[in-house]
Image 1 (cartoon, rainbow, N blue to C red):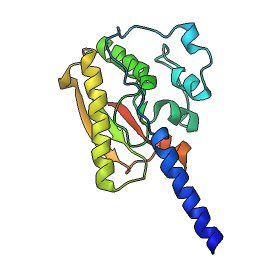
Image 2: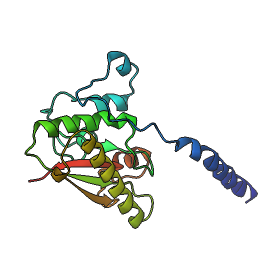
Image 3: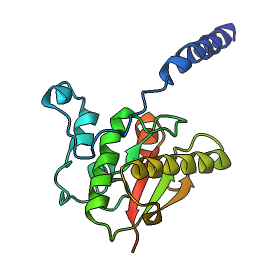
Length: 189
């Protein structure tokens, strides 16, 4: 029994020590750069597998694919060619790594002024339903505000939060939770 209590205490202490380090805020991108700017080859060197997936299809708005797991990782529930943006745990700010996705979405929306969208905020299933609904709304509003800075008219965008109610990957674990913490960009009919 003592061993179990010690183990639980040790795990708890590790969580308290590692938690603040793991949740450090990433630098929020400044959307002051032109929407047409592209990453240089040197910036792309050493990209992880996740980064490669994030960068796939940037210039190919007609990228096709079945709705398998890879498709869902690329597009979420967003209308093609718009790409979802992903968030860190309990964060609503746009991370630097997701700024290019929003810039691509802005370029598409600016080139197609007849299109209106709904930005759908989503969360993983940790936290209360009320907390996740509020967090999903903050995430959707952050993406809307980012697109506004690139010149997309406010009248063409609305936000909606689904909180934890529409998981794309229903299994538990960090890999699934990370895919569920996202904004989808859905073209209004």
